[in-house]
Image (cartoon, rainbow, N blue to C red; front, side):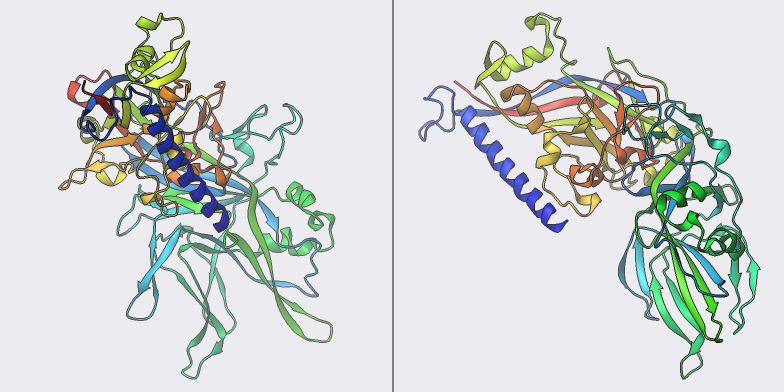
Amino acid sequence: MKKNKIALQIISFGLVILTFIACDKDFASLESDVINNEIATNFDILSEQYDIIAYTKPLEPAVQTNGLIGLSTLGIYDDAYGRTKSSFVTQLSASSYDPDFGNGTVIDSVVLRMPYFSRATGFDEDGNTIYEIDSILPKGETYDNINLRIFENNYFLRDFDPNADFNESQVYFSDKTAAGSGDFSGALEGEELTFVDYNDATEPVMSVVSNEIAINNRGYSLKDVNNLDDDGNKTLLETQTPGIRVMLHPTFWQNKIIDKEGDAVLSNQNNFVNYFKGLYFEAEPVDGDGSFLILNTNSTNANVTIYYSTTETNGDTGTGTYVLRFGPNKINFFDNDGFTLPIESGDPATGDDRIYLKGGEGAVAGIKLFNGEDLDDAPEDNPFETFKNYFVVTDEGKFVRSKRLVNEANLVFYVDRDQLDMLGEVSENEPNRLYLYDIENKRPLIDYVLDATNSTLPSFSKLSHLGILERDETSEKGIKYKLKITEHINNLLIRDSTNVELGLAVSLNVNVEESTLGSVQKDVKGADDFNVPVSSILTPRGTILHGNNSEDETKRVYLEIYYTEPNN
């Protein structure tokens, strides 16, 4: 993976150099008396603003939520739009098949663990590791707890769609439906699993406990109750990073797994997923509130571990573990019934006064530069052709030479502060990043590919192209977003690219859209050829922006272009 990232950066750097060369070459094709040492000052740096069309595209009635590159969301999120609840179902895969547990096998404990995304930042005065977590929303010093309910799933998650073409993957949607198969919500809640705990006695006593999850940034120190140090303290076995860690009643697992030793249902993965169809995770509020969690369920540390003891015929005892990991199929579900701000379809022809963006099962926006490319218009009536003719000379639509050189091009979106403030939105809920993409070809813009700024920390990645939300220094409330699309514009001008419609979406992590991660945009239920970026599905955040028809003309969205031209 490191080699791939380095190679990608080298390629990106090379493309940047080639782009500079191409621009210099194109601009050098102006009349020869423009560029020389004696009259190199005969240039003006100018700017123009262009109107664009921007409109809201609701993701109704659902979005595809399987194959989200190993991430799952769980919990409750409240913002200006209302309440979103997220749940998920996952298959399980065993660490080994045809297990030999031994004789007289008895489960000691069953531990389910799902780690948060976290990083160690230091140590406290007692030597405990201090962690910073960035996968819980809203982010703060403390978090609201959730009640976690876990059920055995009774719905079989298929790999392929039997009603589609050969080898076409099954598509699952956020409203608990499957493409070609309809609603399966009734099968998700099978037997509910019980949470337990053990006391610290030499012979531990199990007791049933609450399913409330205390969400915090503390890790876990696991200690051995049977081995004490010289001071009589339990010895440390291992430390674990912050996350959900619960102990489950062993009876279910004794019946479901241990007692099936030697049975064909534990012989291979296909038999196993037909027999044990997985687990369904659902979150409920505590005292009316809750938190929203983004979980790395692809991690090897995300699993169910069965700890067991055996007694051999000669009286010897032994211990063992059997690990069940999450996947391969995992599906997220969203419940937006609590929405207090309905999202309606915008006008793709004239644009909207406001743009409504919301992650998950919310909304994205369509962006048309120069009113889109209307091939039915005569050249003199086509804004795109007018724009091209101002900057370049063409012959039968093909680039010949440049008249003016584009130095920088930005799309500027102003946050509708009046609307957000009226709805009581808090600054912490406003998304720091938006993602701009080619909505027709379902891919990032060339500016995304060429932007080599930090590719490991999402908050600092792609800063040149996808600028961070500019905030008021005092209130920390959002003001505007500026997204640089210089190379996209140059492609339109000098490389004869098509003026495709763009998409705009909130983003959990702009790095998620890297093609090297295998990120593929997901379907919108019932919509032909309309997809949504993965990073937008994974975030519950939303915002409201001024559109091109905003009553406040000073805040309307626009395209600004800085360019150089000869002043003779």
